[in-house]
Amino acid sequence: NIYYHFYSGEKKASIRALQRVYDYVCAQKINPVFTSEYIDIVKGFLSAKITKTGNETWEISGNGKCRTVRFDQNNKKPDLIKSRNIIGYTYIKKRLYISLGKEDKSIIKLIPENLPQRGMWIKTTNTSIKRIKKNPEGLFIEFLTWQDPEFDLGGCPLNTVSRILIKGNVRNNKVLAKTSPDGNLTFTIPETKTGHTYLIHISFSISSH
Image (cartoon, rainbow, N blue to C red):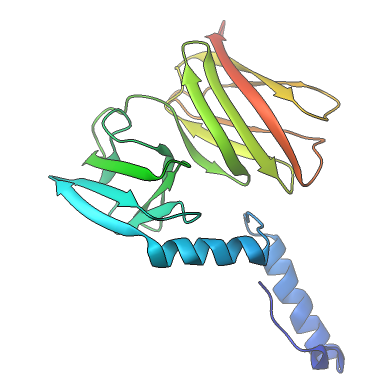
């Protein structure tokens, strides 16, 4: 949110300064939300309850639209099998950020970061996740976007090529992307419309290279 007064338009120097602010903000990786959505997130932050239920285990409830939990350590990660209602996690400035789903209650079980992870997760995205489902056929993600969607997934099958089918108003409804040697899958979906909801199905096949 960039706040300024229209007095900033009185002088060329202040206009140039404001332009630099806009250039900086637009160069960042952002996930735009309406102010009304942000208010709901704040309400969820104020009503959230965090209860430690065991060794490195927490229960999160009453968080509403506030679906990000931060742990000030980077040597831990959530166990995706023993945890519940977790759709992804990532590290920013040596802090662990965990993204929660839409269930009323979440369970977070932390394990050492160097242990093998089991399952796929969303590392980063600039979309609003509406629904995510994993099954033997692959991964289904339903999302709302206000810009060209970008995804970075972790824990994907190694040495595979992913086939991403897109249901929605797009010209090309298929994207191919290769999984990295460490199991990351990064892709973008061009030609989407802002303010629209899309459903993608990600399936994996063995790479020939």
